[in-house]
Image (cartoon, rainbow, N blue to C red; front, side):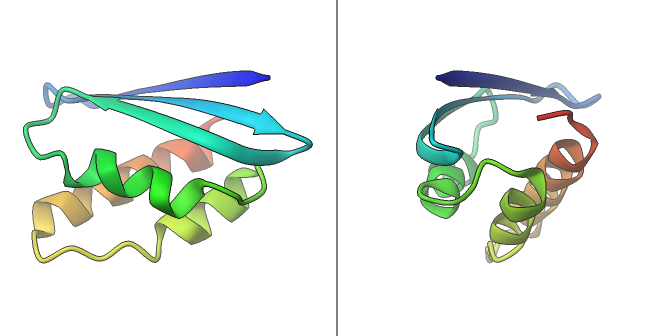
Length: 88
């Protein structure tokens, strides 16, 4: 089964995540972003593949992300906050 999540920020930035979920686990994640920095879009699948499709688990995993670029870290924190508020 596939699940789609779209995230919009007030700043002109958009992230769309498409999940392939099997037996409650994330088999694959595709991230599309119009942000100029692709570090975030490349990192999200690495942290989410193979874990349970539960927002608590997803947020903990994404919280392990670290970047030298504070703007990218702030964007990840925004994504985490958005997932926490989303009904999965």
